[in-house]
Image 1 (cartoon, one colour):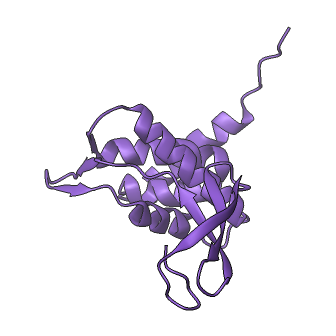
Image 2 (tube, rainbow, N blue to C red):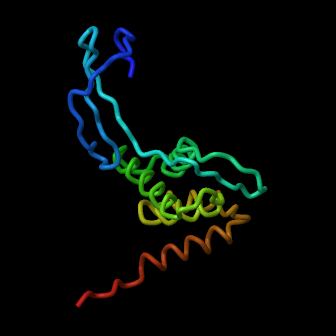
Length: 159
């Protein structure tokens, strides 16, 4: 790890802690040349995951692409940066639990919609409208009604 102050390539880890999101590690580092201190974050990465797109083409998994899509659907919605990171990590965890080296973009979309439905209904509808390619207002209305019915259904009492 290069020092951001002097560019020296030797640094030492002074302290390591689990970050507030619970899915990354914050490392406090110190440059061995100029003694400048800085923090780095180590996050889980999905490796060797290939996405099979609707047209049959394949591409490597991209966390950036996932976060861009989520940010569009959550734009102007009340979600903290910490909750957003947890959402991304939960989605990636579910993708890893599939234990496959290739997954379809449809599978990713279903996992994302499952988590968005729980996180923010408005963001879920936004994402679903693009993902499901709603053709008209009627399709949009049906999906909204399904969401509302699920939210209104009485919860079972635990005895």
